[in-house]
Length: 204
Ligand SMILES: C[S@@+](CC[C@H](N)C(=O)[O-])C[C@H]1O[C@@H](n2cnc3c(N)ncnc32)[C@H](O)[C@@H]1O
Image 1 (cartoon, protein in one colour):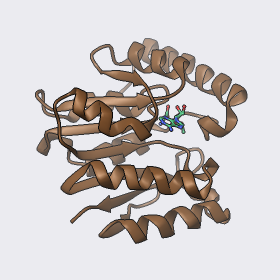
Image 2: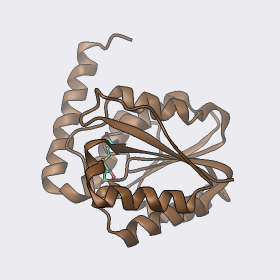
Image 3: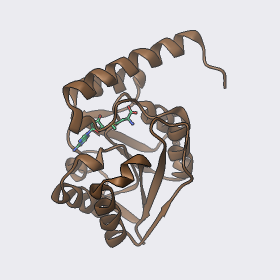
């Protein structure tokens, strides 16, 4: 679909906000630019959001993935996003006024599900900067994700191809394999900056 001039200006404003946050909080932000439209489309398509009733997003940043979730989920699906950076909470709320966005770490997922009267969730879409996390934090988050997913639930997160040279990327992959019952990876989106693919972890 062709984008209007005002949509392009808004994208530019969000990109500037993103770069500013990267300069201020580089390790927590973990990327220099927002995810591309193609990467966001891929992640939200393979998640088959219209078939499930509870979805959580971790680390929405400027809300590029949140926007797709809001378009693709069923109208009565419970959905909220957890983001630690106040500026990104505001950016996501501005882009997606109807989305529920809490300023809260992903580690609090269970607490927020309980606030919504849910015992677990069917999908988790994450943009968390795994490469900047130490092994304990990676493990804590993977355990949280597995714990809150219903049986049959699925977890999606993207990884940057150039990032695979770092030991933290392989440590993360090993931990995913050890915790999830099945782990697969998507095709690579070469036009994303940097090129990226999506991991899918399934809970049996
Ligand atoms: C790579 S950026 C997200 C990019 C987003 N997909 C976009 O394109 O705008 C990672 C995000 O995770 C957030 N984050 C980092 N640690 C977090 C945590 N423990 N819980 C929730 N959000 C976290 C950061 O503040 C940042 O917004």
